[in-house]
Image (cartoon, rainbow over all chains, first blue to last red; front, top):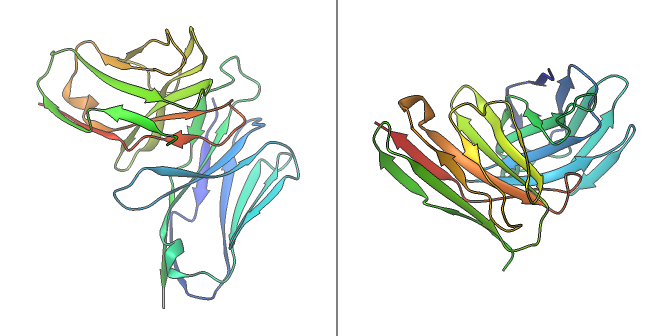
Length: 114
Length: 112
């Protein structure tokens, strides 16, 4: 059974600083997804990473996938207040029969302050 | 406008009274999925569908049923709701499993 762990779970950042959120998973996963959720709102898809070494960037966010290390990272560059949200990663169990099943990490609550 | 529509948005009901939460998408997406979100437990997948007539269990399917008779609709059925199914539910869809998902606005269910 796939387990997905994020760290840190809480992240308080100063504006302008850089930081990384880590997403570790326990078994082979060949799809890794990142989502954002603002308080009281629905989820928004950020990135879909489909292969080892995949890197995707959108604005101040960059996501990467290392399937050998079973690790994905979400890097935040020069944080701004608008990035304050909860970020989730999710993966599938590539070795299982339920290919479309997704397991989520616990979420990282990011707060960016002046 | 491309969207995933869930109904109802809010529902308070009683134990044992069957209910259906509807989910409809207008983007011709193949993949659809239901999630529940609970404080301290995060997001958990209930059921998903890779295409019409193809459904499979997620991590927490007990107490739920789904059907996918047509591409646009993926209703979530609680045959005999219990208080532990009180939660915030999200429906999502994507062209395929490899694509970013679009989420509905959520349905907050309270089972008394």
